[in-house]
Length: 155
Ligand SMILES: [Zn+2]
Image (tube, rainbow, N blue to C red; front, side, top):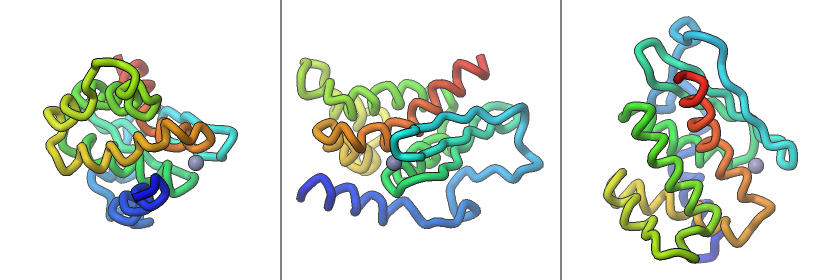
């Protein structure tokens, strides 16, 4: 599979369009504090992080399908796990998208499978093909950067 085909598979799997369908969706009245916004000027993607009372967060994306699919994977994790665990995963994902796994002995694939299970790890890994496509890399990175930014803000 080419990186485009692999990404389309994940986009179809995770991106359904309606925010109410997304796991972990937070209704406007349940949001606390000011949302964190990060954006990617080159593609026009914008990720807004909404914080829920008692910890945890939810990402909303205005932007391209790659960014939305990447955020959907992050949202699935945010719905199931505490923010600090998702941050650990986010750092591995960002390393993978940057291509760090190919240039070091640091085994991101094994580490990710240990953190999130085989199925989700396989879906996350499909974004790693973007390490060879600098123009679209930011699209997949943005939601994970938003998670890390939010954790800094919440601290
Ligand atoms: Zn994009």
